[in-house]
Image (cartoon, rainbow, N blue to C red; front, side):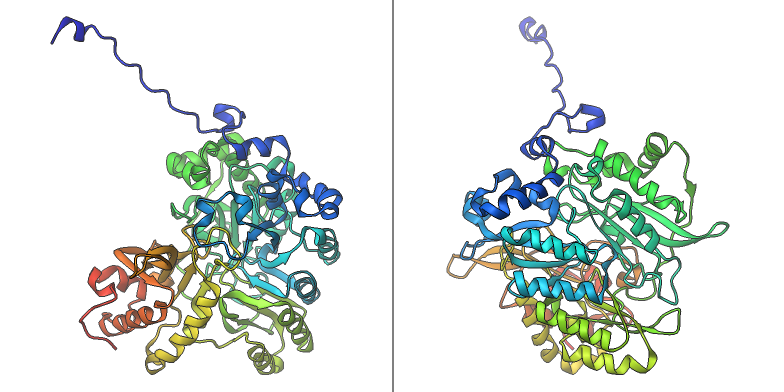
Length: 578
């Protein structure tokens, strides 16, 4: 080696870029999203909507308000009609945005009275061209909403105790809650007081309205674990401590999208009184230590992946609570599905009835008729579910059959086929700017096609077999944790032109009742895609293969999908079918 080479100074190590953690790197914004959030709190935009934009119209809206702060109040611009799939990646946003909005009505715990339901139906009719969707986060979404109408919409919502505060944005989103909280005969602990206290104290609090990204919470005390706790940032699951009695087990750091990660237990037992304070501690920790530099890495799951649950718990205890938390038991595996479809006993001797609209799609007139139907049967309460379903509460025994008939007449089936029961779909290209493909109408069509095509084996099908349809990779409809998940994308057609279709995910599940084992993500098979028109034919073939090659009647689809070879899951396979 030459003297010149050996004397060359060593290259200094490359400096690591800051992650934008407030408690580590300071609060200097590292991207435009962080800049506009620091310039003005998203909560403040409501005043401008009421005093300026609703009077001067869409053209008057500041771009950072339109595509940023409006979300803090549940408002997203819709896709402009005629904009082709994938155009959001190449066109400027003003060419993709329509002048109408999707409005998300926040329903913590999915709780509704019939008066509130009727009001939502009236808003849909009066301001949303009668559109309405029940989401898989228990909200209701309207479309075709004009900014000019928002003051009146908020006035009406708030007159019945509803709102849109922090329904979107980098905020604490809606709190998922057990749809049967406080009424199920087999409930471990009622989470209602915890959900209400968190909402009362912290939703709309400026101290928590600038988080690194969205922050999703879920709380249940039901043994079916009915709030998909494994894919939320913060979750509480009902357990019984051997000495302290009923309480909650804490999970953190779950989320799907393009980098799916399941939540982890912190090994903590919380009483009802402790739970709101611990929610606040975890949320503050995310605010202070979450990664703000890159939006794609800003969810809590990335911090937890780096820290691990032990360090995360230690930081929560030392920096935010100032005390140690109690160790607690792991919740037992659920033994029943958590969608609450059908008729079930309440603890007070009455009944609740779960019913299935197709992929969550309803409309204003239907919601008005549903409110009247429920009241005519002596009830005034219902809940939405994290599976795009509804549950009517407080039904007297002598009214059950009549109410079931009435729900069926409205298209809300309390005894649905496995496909109607278990199919979900996101908003899709009809309204969403990020979507590549239609989802809602696809799901509705596929349900009917599968009911007809598989009628001959209906008695062999499992109670649930989830089919989740998503228009893009962001997984709002939870594709990676479905038995069959369809991710919207553009595919090369036979003529070389791009055409909308889906990548297939198989064998996901969130509880042992889905998988006979731990919750897990679905698998993909190289090159396995399906066109929109080919979904029903492919799913039919796949289900027949499952029925004919499963090891026993108790082997779930998810377990089977992970066990069999790739070729069994492809479009063409020469093996036997049911």
